[in-house]
Image (cartoon, rainbow over the protein chains, first blue to last red):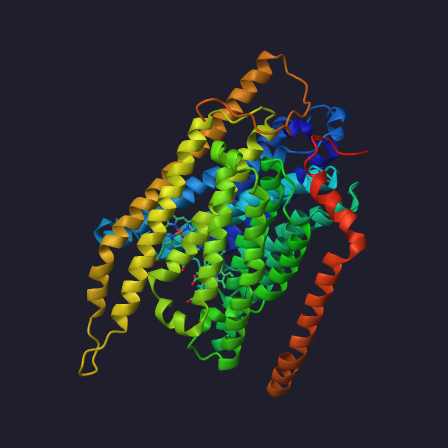
Length: 552
Length: 53
Ligand code: HEM
Ligand code: HEM
């Protein structure tokens, strides 16, 4: 892969790594003996870890110019594998956290393994590690195919992919050491945040530069979603993380906001992270891989445009539904609630558009687990957005807020929608990338599908039950006007559901492990086949209707 | 200041969102765009897997 970089690109890469090593050294020196210093060493280690293989191929000859006649897919390939590995890691910690809630005695009594530190490792690991890598990998692929243009250079995509993963590792290791700015989904401290800004700007520039080179005049709608994801996440990230560090040698910083303004900024960020990280980017996947896999164009292109602008402009105003019954002015809460309800329209337009695309191809959905992953994702997208709009109503939120109902909603979206569409897209993409007709094993996709579906259903129903029981117990009064149940009573009532959730999560995790094995085996078999056929020409073979095998 | 911002966002916020919605619907349904959209949604399905030159 490194030999495919041009000599000039290899030199620039080395320069970047040297600069990074010095930055890491400065961090290590300034923050001696503190988490900040340790992160300095981590930066150095990462730079060397990438630098060594680079140096080994540094003097390789210039690559064959024929490669520039093909799309550049190496970063996509690595991104897919990273996404699957993060899926296992993040979901493993999810199951761990779920087990801790069910059996608190399981704790191993080390600071880094306490619930409060593991929980953000789970959320960042699955959202940013798994989701983010999948988004980056697929976006490079979709961008090139729909623009009919190659990526503008071969270095910046690597910078984005590897730089982003460095951010994720800094984040996760930081939580273990207690480094956090205590903003949910924006926990990493100022230095990691600045690094992510740099990475993200390069990412956006790749998009713009490739689009500027496009040969296809119309920009396909999937790209609009990916671009909204990149652009809005940049804005959200920068604004919500405005902070003043204690010093340049310390990890701690203080937010530029305080009080209710801080809360509003955080949940403007938080909700739009849901909207643009967990929704817009994955809708980009949906609008490309679902029609492609089904072999049918999207049902209504017009509808996809209308729902795009609906989602982009309405989500922005919905964040205050996280702050019902707080110090936030009543009208701002009402504004958020109103927009959340209207949001159902573009959300269901997208879900309906996806399902209508499949109408007439149900036999394919039945036979092809990959397509079924995508279909189920569209259904759960519809369910979780309906649920979200409902929970945003102030009166409903008074019951759901602080309860497991919210966690149920989150995972209906996260497992049912985000993870399902990702697995479906990856199964569609992997054979394409490694130039094979099919995945290593169609039966294992089937196994993964049923594990994932069963896991999601068990998880979500457990949390719905638990949440509603919890909420009702908290608001039940006796005749004399005192609370009927103590908090402990509600905990006891939740216990069986917590066990069920841990079990459902375990099924989901097992599915992800099966999926990863399948991906890795596909890569291995593809390499072996290529070696046997004597190197093989790199001629694209994908694009046909998926080949179905007996017994699938 | 606060009252001004509130008054502004409560009135103009509505108008610009309505204008935007109307604009988007007109764009999506503009007859001349139909051919472009039809081509776009079908073009991703072709079997071509090389950049165009
Ligand atoms: C194996 C599968 C999973 C398991 C067992 C699991 C388990 C958990 C647990 C136990 C919590 C903490 C709930 C609490 O504090 O009461 C949690 C929170 C969370 N998880 Fe997962 N999870 C899984 C997969 C995922 C995936 C794939 C995503 C995202 C793509 C995700 C996103 C989240 C988020 C955003 C939260 C925070 C929710 C909130 O603050 O309301 N999870 N998860
Ligand atoms: C129309 C779409 C949606 C609306 C209106 C909506 C609304 C809501 C509401 C009202 C809450 C509870 C806030 C609270 O009581 O604190 C919530 C929480 C949440 N939702 Fe949604 N939701 C939508 C779609 C989604 C989707 C598709 C996902 C995931 C892929 C998602 C992920 C989350 C997360 C992670 C939280 C937990 C935030 C926290 O940590 O407290 N939502 N949403």
